[in-house]
Length: 532
Image 1: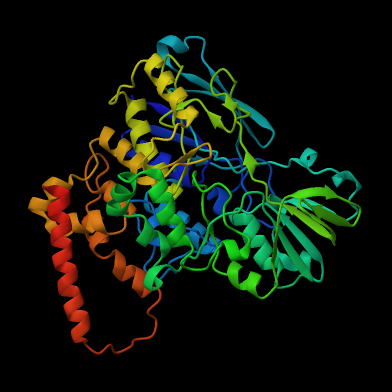
Image 2 (image 1 turned 90 degrees about the horizontal axis):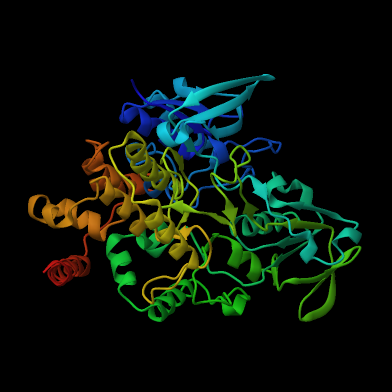
């Protein structure tokens, strides 16, 4: 009899988990508290309790070729960076293509997930749900938690003296939907992540004045990278990842700074990160430098004090009149339906082996999918996590002893720099390609470049030197997709189709031909140095 698996949440990770369960012959039941799938990507005019919220203008920060499910490319006519409405349409296409909807129970809240009395023997869970005022209980052989980390707003009002005397309006960025509220107002946005920067830029088109307060600064990059290519298709390649991870961290940081400053000098714009040793996620925004240089957005240091109608910043005695304060101060997460003895959240992270399994449980029958912040898209990361986790739940893969897993988790929490490659500063941040490859290796699904170099050299070169697109993750192993090779070899065609909407005649160039020849020779030298 197929194992029964409860899945909590029908967002991007929940959908991947349903599909992976079906692929492995398990019987999934997904509980979604709202009336539709999509999680974060489903825009609503009002904030819904327990669900991530986004504003109307949100566009993906990872391009379509890098952020799709590994066996389901976006439609080729989609723009490279996808607006939230089209992203939701894509998720619905995915659900329909793989018949996932029949496994989802909508408008069903998970109240509790508890270990059965005989858990040490069976590993089973009792799941209590609430639907239309009626509670139900069911027994499951395993549980996959896919609720994400963007549901509980972090609003540290105690860190802002005088906020209780402020006569204007203030709210967390989770509540922001449209820029109309900023018309002719003086606006302060606190926090320079992607949301804070987006909101400041949007507000600057309507507001009287916009101030963006940042404590530590940030690197800002554009979605449009070298020669107009999507930034992540240039930045995230196996070759570049291998190269970066082989260099001492100070050299990598110097190269990153040089690259980031090639668009504009961050110091001159008051944006340069104070901590340039540890990498925080770069801010993706195509407009910010233009808004700063035209005086529409002013960068400010941290807030010292809030007064009735104004704000005082550190190191600047002048009071700035303010009507609206937006706190883009991030999120915390928890699992209200789980007992702390199952998963305990401390300092913004949980004790999860490979960011998935509670290390101390006697039976590995509960997995957390998508609770991670890779420098890459969450869709292919969550899909790979689910493929590995499902094989653990099925019993095909055996986890190490609890003591070994706990030791690894504790070592990871220390976040000790290796001295090489990028150094990540925040909990849950991780090297995207290295992490996914680790899971792929465990299920025998990582592409073997040495073998491919002999049997399919064009594909091997595309995998190593080209963008690390998700199709690589389904090229082999369990869940192999027959269309993966073709998707890899045509990924640039789909990228250009979205932008090349006017046909232009390009005259052949002798210089370009010679450049291609020299590039090919350089490529051969690189292959020789790397593989031999």
